Image (tube, rainbow over all chains, first blue to last red; front, side):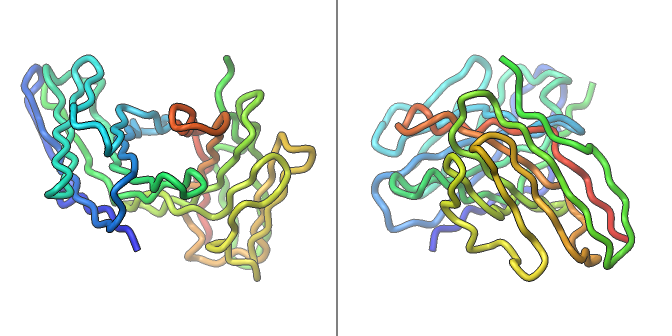
Length: 115
Length: 116
């Protein structure tokens, strides 16, 4: 069975600096999708970025980018120029290509932004 | 476009009581998910609907939890009777359709349940 591990329960970063959140996963599949979701305090979970495993190019969305290392089964999220609004729980999630679109979730990393 | 709506936002009940949560997905979204999120953990899928049919309810504790999605739109999740370990946030999410670029799940604000 696939698993997703986020080894950092909590991270903190100074405003305007860069932070990287780690995620590793275990799978025997070759075709799958990876996601980072953000859950701000008392607000809904939103998609930050997604990555298709067959694409070698790392996904980027404005200040958010990923470092996808397929052989190492690693999928880290880099947030550049951190802003106070980035404070949230960040969840890494995995989906098999044929899985009824179901996600397997990590336990999350709480990101604290220091002003 | 209106987002996923959930109510109530907060609920406090005594153990052995019953509770129901309501979800209204984004208009036109065929797939609806109910998740249970215990503090400090990622969401756990309870049940997935495609229109008004159940796709997967393998992790739904059917002795006490039930869910329905009549007419393929709104959905209700019920717990009867509640236990202390049911204290969690219950998230509803919806997804538009098939295809890799349509796999984004849109979440509601959740219902925080406290069982005393």
